[in-house]
Image (cartoon, rainbow, N blue to C red; front, side):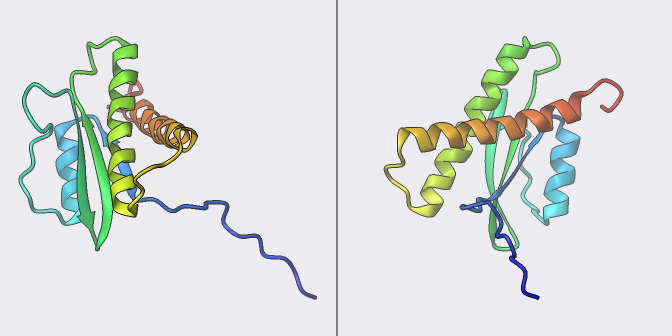
Length: 130
């Protein structure tokens, strides 16, 4: 008998992205991706976060790095993550050639990216897992 195969619910497949909280994790991930560039953990010494647009196996990928979070107010960390999530959204819009996304689409996109990055942050910084 025939059966119905439901399709993937994702209407848009975006690039891979992750968050790293230590220089060691950053170097480890660059190595895993086969990226030989000697990139600093953040784009400049005064930055607490950077969104690196990289390419791995011909596909766009983003690594968000954050530092100084250990002694920061949790609201500052959340703000920094939302800031870097916005950069991912901006890069993705350029990649797909979208010049005028709706306000609601942009808001949901940043919300989703930020929530995923915050989940990564929580997993990496739980006590006993550093």
